[in-house]
Structures are given as structure tokens and as C-alpha cells.
Image (cartoon, rainbow, N blue to C red; front, side, top):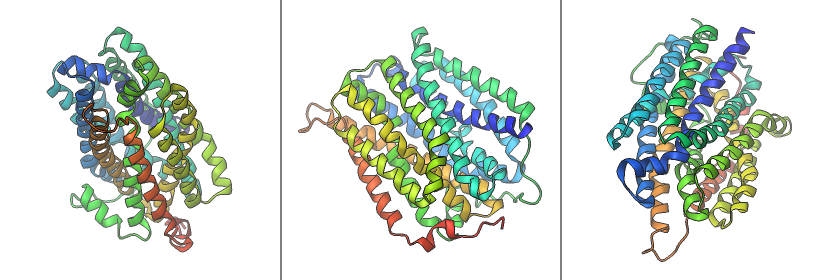
Length: 410
């Protein structure tokens, strides 16, 4: 029962991280225009800069947080992060100038570097053959948070653009209290690893882990795939306002629908897929559906098209846990925190690059001075990135698949 409660807590932590992202998306255009008096196109650029700031801090800090959890344990890292996350949401709630929003994103990026620790915790309590499907629970929790976040954002936005942040602070604070009582420590002396600064940074961690068989190319795939996937949070609110004329409530509804589908796919459907397909095949399967969804959004012109594409694109979410499972099998037990710290850093780097690139492309293709009007252009670029990932994965033989690498537990 204690382990189940602990699992509930760590999944709640992921969900609350996702809620924090989802709450911001529906109100971000209005919030930026309120603070900076910018028009929609300029607000998109500001939004990209804020998202990039958040992700840059995650990129820098995720390996350190993951390595700290390998040394000092998962429990203190998660609880301290939640404490400062609560304070950060309060800061965002009172911010009335752009520099405070940026400061909030800096603090938020550091405190949101917990996915590596959560993933390492689940790796600690999972058998090797269960890792991919259990990592799917992380995606399901993220999906649930992505459902609740936009809904909360749209609901609390009725009370002002600041109210959603105070609600997020309350959620994080309550989860901190729960974790204090139910979260056990899973790092034992048998797997505890010394903390070294030369490996507790993105470059050092990537350098050391890239030496493991099969990991280098999968790191490249992880980065490219995440840059492509991040087109959704980077551009969705601006894209749907420009293309379909949606308001915050409609944006929140669409994101909630997408979150429901991700929760179903990663919490349940992936378990069925993995009964019939290898992790490598599951990865390619997910990328294929992601490609269809991205290409569809590139050319969508009606609201109904956007909603039809949601269940198609959500199937693509099986790719990430499949790839994580392959990478986790290739790493040693005492490297799980470091590995997932690197994965979190690669994801954060993608969240840094993608908003800058995607909002910039959006700005160009909706500009009245540009010769083509195509709000969906960022999605088409993301689709090309998925094609590149599929080519890289297809280039591997069965023998290089991490499924063939013996687990460090055996």
C-alpha cells in the first residue's frame, strides 16, 4: 500500500507539472498582451521567449537534479522541488511586468526539473520488462494534467488572468504535503552513486552516457522527436486563434480532449501494443501516427478537422515511453537518474529550441507581407522532423536494438 501511495504521489507530481503548463497556455496570449500591450503576432514571439527561458533552465538543471537523486535520494529532491514550485506559481500570479514573468520562468524551469527523478523512481521499483509500460504511466499522468490544466486555465481565467496561477500553487502545495507523508526512499547503498559535477551537467552527462551501446543515436532521435512534438504547446493557442478564431475556453477544451486521449493511449493502449510489438516497432508505430497528425494540422482549415486529428496524433504519444524503455535497458541500475536526467535535458533543450523556431515560423507565415499565408507551417516542419527520426530508427538492425542488450539486473 505504501508503494502504491508513493506511485500515486510521483504521478501526481507529473500531473501537476503538466497542469502548470496547461493552465498557462489558454491565458498566455491575453496575459502577454495585458503586460506588454503587444498584438497577437508579437505576443507569440514573447510567448516563445518565455517558453524558451523555462526550457533552457530545465536543460541546464535536469542532469544535476537527476544526479543529485542518484546520490542523495529521490525523496529530498522531489520535496524540495515542489516547495519552490509552489512559490514560483505565486510569483507568476503577482507579476505585472515582463521581467517578473521571465524570472518566474527561470525559477519554474529549475523546479520543474523533476521528470528525471520521477522516471528514475519508477525505474527503481520496476522490473526490466515492465519499464516501458510503467513509463507509459508517466505519459498518462502528463495527459491527465494536460486535461485538467487547460480546463482549470479556462475556468479560472473567468476570475482574471492571475487566478490560474494561484490555483496551481495550491495544487503543488497540497501535493508537497502528501509526499512528505507517503514518499519512501528507493535509493539504497547498492545503487547509490557519487555526485560529480563533471557529469552533473548536460554536456558531461551526454558524453558519458553516449559511450553505452545503442544510446548515442537514440539521444539524437529523442532530441529531434521532442523538438517536433513541442510544436503543440509552443504554438497551439496562437495557431488556433489565427486559424479558427478560438477563445480561451475553446483552446482549453481542445487541449483537454488531447490530454484525455494521451492518458488513454499511454496509460492503457500502450500495454496492448507492447504485447504484440517490440519497443522498436512500437516507437515506429507511434511516429507514423504522429506524422499523420502533424501533416493534418499543417493544412487544417476547419474546427472539426482539428478535433478529428486529436485521436490520430495522440496515438503518436506511445513513441516516447517506448524510446525511454529502450534507453533504460541499455543503462546500468546506478545510472538511471543520470540517464533520465539526460532525457529530461534533451526534452528541455527541445522545449527551448522549438518555441523559438515554431513561433518565428508562425510569425512569418501569418505576416501580411509574406507571399504565403499558412498558419500551419510550424506543424509541417515538425512532420519533416518525424520523417528524419523514422529514417534514423529504420537504419538500425535488430542486434543494435537495446531489447537485445542484457539488463544490468540480470
